Image (cartoon, rainbow, N blue to C red; front, side):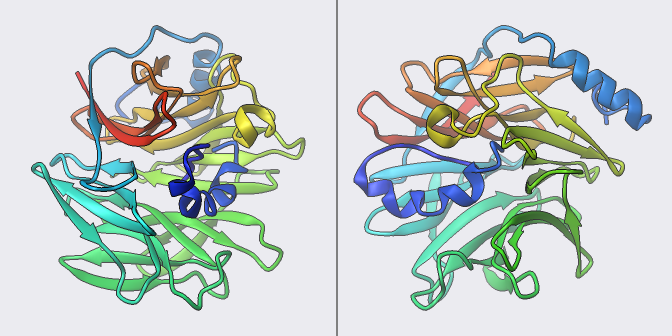
Length: 323
């Protein structure tokens, strides 16, 4: 989820899952150039300065009758997926203004985390007999659910591109987190070099992967994996320590589109999480007006950004940001 809101009691079910993601703090633009070493240099240069706040129109999104709503991904067709909370946690799809509740059959909680241009969605679930530290991933395609479980490990599926390649995380035997990519039935680990934990959040049609990692000093950073080479992503001036922003410090890269534009969030000097956009080597901040916390989750090929925010009354909502 890479989301962590200190909100009302209604979100406590959701927050049970937050530590697994929060401890990582998570080809057409100049960032995505053919030479991986130049790519890393471009990111390093971009991180030396932050740009202006991102402008546009914010639209608040709430699943009808819910006490909390979060949006995690959107596709070029404008469909969005996320979760809502009532007495438990359910996934949902928002398409052409209509919400559809999604529950994995027999599950006690369901998270819907990613959706591609074909309408295939991924997420994870738990059953009444599933330990909270061992969720099970799933793919939903044309109304059919398929469980995906990394061998002998808890599994979360977070993103899926048009080719059906899936990214996510799995827990090892000592509950450490590792990213992975699942392509043509084969799992491959995605671990940032030297990191103590890695979280893969999203992938684009070109196969680029973004996510977050925790280094050996306990600091949290975003990352980009492009053509086999890793590069760190740190919002300029972000508080990197894990203790910042109520335990969600650092920078988290959550979403990437076909243009190579990246969104996520960072812990600011005000000890508050803010969303960000990284486009053509330039950072800009994303803050829902009046929100206490803003976290950007994904961006589609049209430049539409989705995410979640905490309002002044400590209620959690999804949002859509359009130009």
